[in-house]
Image (tube, rainbow, N blue to C red; front, side, top):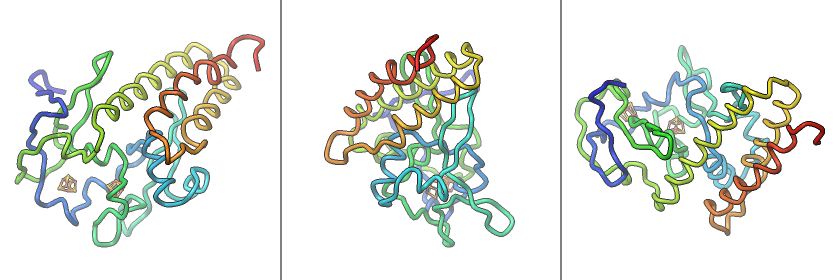
Length: 222
Ligand code: SF4
Ligand code: SF4
């Protein structure tokens, strides 16, 4: 990030909207494991596709390790000479546009975490199109409840950051594996009730994680 990087809040306007998005799909190709999925992304995918997390794991979702923490990401499929997102159709359109993951909504923005929350910035070289117009960031994201959403994004980021730090100190493969299995089970595998507010359910699980995820790594505990 450059020193003169400009930062934005959700209510700010940013020059990021391209008229060429439809059918372009450039940012949906050759992304490797970089489109990470948070618990809300997986909740939305399982809900709208009517498939469980375990079921999607065999097709659209992969798992990768980040500093000892196992997290899900969107899988790419081989398409002629390049990789393309599992959900990109042959016309370059997203088949799950209405419930696409948070990182897909965000592009070409990034998030800069300052220790307590985050702010947005435009990723240098993120989208090569030059015809961009200004749009309010919350409108670009297309998220209806922006405040609880941003709180969730922030809480999840700092939870994962803290988990990475804890895992680095544990240095025990068996305990690390148990912690990862618990995180996947608590936040991804166990379905959220679609009739209840997602953010409240997430907050309760986050609170519970201290006891159910980390206590097991204490000496002598199960
Ligand atoms: S953001 Fe840019 S790269 Fe992505 S689909 Fe739109 S125009 Fe294409
Ligand atoms: S989910 Fe949709 S927007 Fe996201 S990478 Fe796949 S095709 Fe592109």
